[in-house]
Image (cartoon, rainbow, N blue to C red; front, side):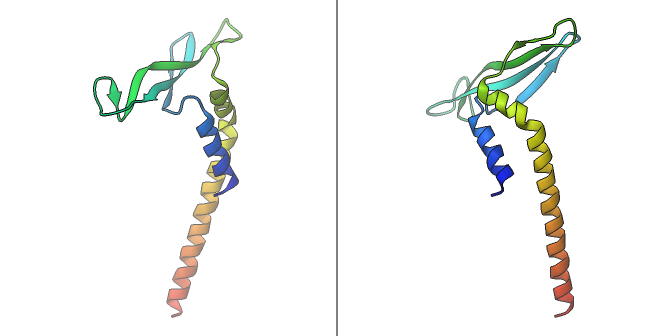
Length: 118
């Protein structure tokens, strides 16, 4: 496993909200939400989806688009670390995917050349 994969897995594991995140916005604000799921014991039933109790979404951040220089909500430390690392992690993951694709193409080409000479 590469360093980028290990760092990404660590950030994801330490995030307080591991479910899907999404943004809602209007003319004045954008708001970042996370699914609010808690593992549920036993069988699926009322309020349980795929083994989790599902509650209203957790608001991670609310930021004004104008007339306010600060956010009204702040993410938990693990979520904040994930948010802060996201741009560099995504860039490194994209580089890693590109490198692996090139490596795979080279391996295919080498295998094809060997099959031609056999």
